[in-house]
Image 1 (spheres, rainbow, N blue to C red):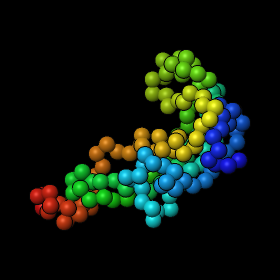
Image 2 (image 1 turned 180 degrees about the vertical axis):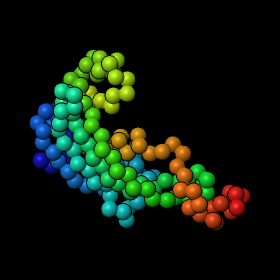
Image 3 (image 1 turned 45 degrees about the horizontal axis):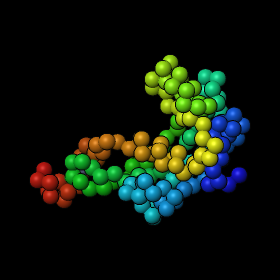
Image 4 (image 1 turned 30 degrees about the vertical axis):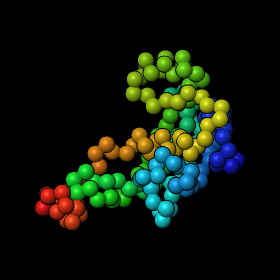
Length: 150
Ligand SMILES: [Zn+2]
């Protein structure tokens, strides 16, 4: 199965199949500011599974994203390793019922034409820190000087 051909997410979840591949920056327009063309791109693996008896998609992602440190305003690379299991509801009503039982549930509504690139984009965007910072002591000295912090 071609990674980029849209597919039925609920059927895929039930099938227990998996697919994996890589996505290039051009395929992830909403992440343009966080990815660099010279990096290896985004690797993913999507599998159908069961989560608490519900059909689910397990999405594993490995990507290097570039974040702007909010202290020195210099960009730095961060390796993201994500592994999320998302139950797939048949429709909005089922999703609402699941969310009433578990408000923190990370579930999707079935999509007959799911594009894996959009799903990968969503997951990466959700996992980016709101206020990225270098580790303590790792800030760029020139950046700190420009910010008047050194
Ligand atoms: Zn910094």
